[in-house]
Image (tube, rainbow, N blue to C red; front, side, top):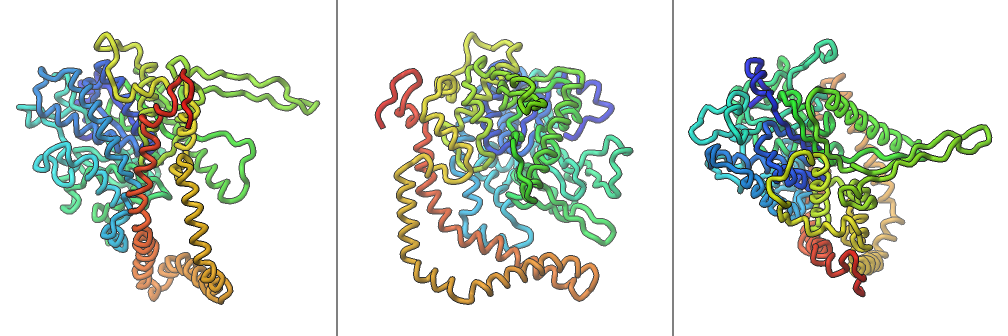
Length: 584
């Protein structure tokens, strides 16, 4: 199931509909569920032929694809109805929320055995996340004998009943319920190119323009998994998704070993988040011959800074954001300038902006700002709510019902705007579970807005929302300081801090100089591997092991408190829009 061949291109692309899910952590995943719901009740999901996913979109998109595979291999084409897709999305919404509320980010560090494995060179946090994606989301959808354990990419091809040789590029034209191609996008640090996982193959797509691409080495994509080194033939879906969602700086790159070599030198492919190359997943649709596009974009976007920081870290961070923003703009401009239809749903849709004039000779603005007022109320969302939803954290932790339902409903309502020209299948909308939070999006209560503001925080959300927990934490910290005060004072008065500082500086110098010295002097070459092993033990395994107990306590006590505080039932108890707020 690779890119269309020239021979099949004309037939395959006739009206070919592609669906793109952007990156943006679980914020994006929940938003995409709302878009899926809107598409399902308009009969559009059966028409989708390519699904291109990035990062958080890959986490959700891979799960949706597995459910579609289960449907298309269970029922003949004539028996498949649009109701089947509605049921898939309804089940998907509940299952995905339940699985992710276990807090994937914290679970990645909550297992002693997995943390100990981090001292190895072939195991990292990204590998652990891959295991969790498979365990919590993917493994239970289909039988292990059918897709492997863990689920394998090469076993994701879809074969409708009685069609053992089916290929979407050749045979979809005869079907009403199309068989989609799943494209999971990552980025390779080796060349900076897009890296794609499909059920047919994995690798970099061929360059479209040799005059532009002047890299001295290009990694050719194999024809299929059967053509590559044996230990990579069963490459897992969970690892493909982990590579696609491997946020640089937050998670280590996901490695693929033994796939390429340059002479005697082994090439280790290092993959990071697909959003580095194209955070909307649009290029994967274009390269697969799509002419109709549904793009669900819930990625974070660069904000304006009245007084940008000028220190080194601030400038580098801002430049990185600018480059990512430029990539997004270029990708979307290319999409909108192409022939064909585009339904584009953005998490910042309908938000207002101001155009500021320059100061004149008198030192005052030449004119008053021109204000473009928000239009979010056209689709039933208060502008403040929309702004806060667009700023929800990009994370893999537990999302409360209030957060998840709000994002799902927002994607659903914005999807209605983008797909409004396609009629509903039934007289009314489906009874989606997330619809019950609709009154709060239009008329937000004080508690609802508070929860959305806290939703933008990466750490400490439970402390912000539960006052008694904050007090308890302060008391515990104060008590700990009192108990440890003598030891802390003795430590600071001793010479140990000086030795520690010297050791840290020495370690930093060794880390910086050793790779360079190894290239110049053979004697240093043999020290590189032991030094790397020591770093892995201290920074990966050691720190993770130290924090495991705290993380386990968090998952047992704090995580449930946060989810209970953010439940729809708790929100309802604190006041329904349009009614007096009950006493606390």
